[in-house]
Length: 465
Figure 1 (cartoon, rainbow, N blue to C red):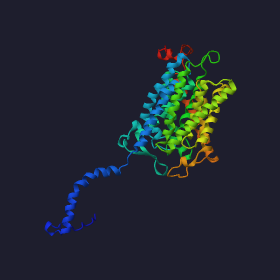
Figure 2: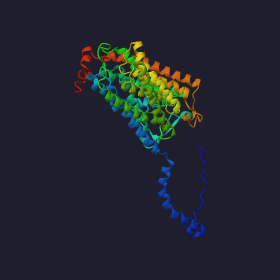
Figure 3: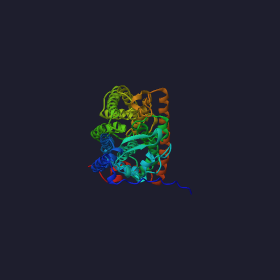
Figure 4: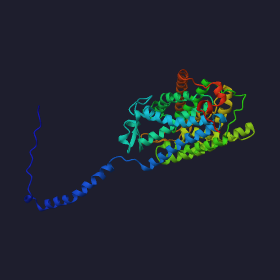
């Protein structure tokens, strides 16, 4: 083996041979050495990437707001619209799913949704949140190369924020099967559905490696991932389980609309975290998302109430709160991409579409969507997912890699149609298969006797009072 010869080392001069200038330089260096050594940690700290505390504070707040949407928001909203004998069972669904989906997300859901993986699903590299600890106090990046998305918050905050979305999505679907699904069936269905349906779609849409992300489809806060996904799952479940016993012959009036109004109000306030939080930072896009969320929610109320007033002669409280949710659902995929006037149009269209879906469509088709999970979330999610392709304002979607952003156009509308149809079909088929598996394992529906007695007593052994 050939080796390079070592260079000769000059002799080190002794103190007596140093010039005056050299001696002065040496003394200066000796005096500054302690200060330089003390400054090294500070210099290293400045060079290391640091989280943006303002962005992190906003995302922590948004996370709490979105969790509030499920508990207590959705729990109150749904339980206020069922009969007295099913109030506790309906609350239990939302409350228990908040716990169950948290653990599912921590164990495998997050890894399948936001692990690198490929175009269709993540990998198991973050199973049990492996690898998160070393970067607990640093910004993180999803993806790599030109498609990478950089965040100014710790990954722990992102994980928790996304967990609240994974919680509320299956909880929304429960509204379609209120009053008749076994609790054991709901638990098993949620485990399978969260891992096999929710996580893959989240990966498609929100991870830079996802095929819908690469397609250029716009979904700011969950039009496809949350609302179309939950609405379609609810529709399929309602069809598979069949209608409630006594529907059309017994009084199905809501037990306590006051609870539903409180729940709807909590949902509305929480939606600011849902939409403005999806900006991932406290900035101009978050501000616009918050503004258009309020505008669309308000427009949804006005449109639904107007339609109901004209067709039924009286504006109802149930109609007003349903209209608010319709407008908020529709603006969700568009919140960070549209300006206020388009948001007003989206909210008005959603209010009318939701009224039609919750009243006319389900009667035409004959399915029993108990609390209008598909009629509001599915229909209005589709409205928002499509209209963002018409009204998107380029500068709001601009990134360093695409400084012009994505503006509304016919081509973009077609991309939105493609993403919407793909989500609809995948969710419908996947949900049907999972329901059939669950039916074989534990059965889906309570007996007629248990349904007439009420799920509070038959499933949980408790009464509201």
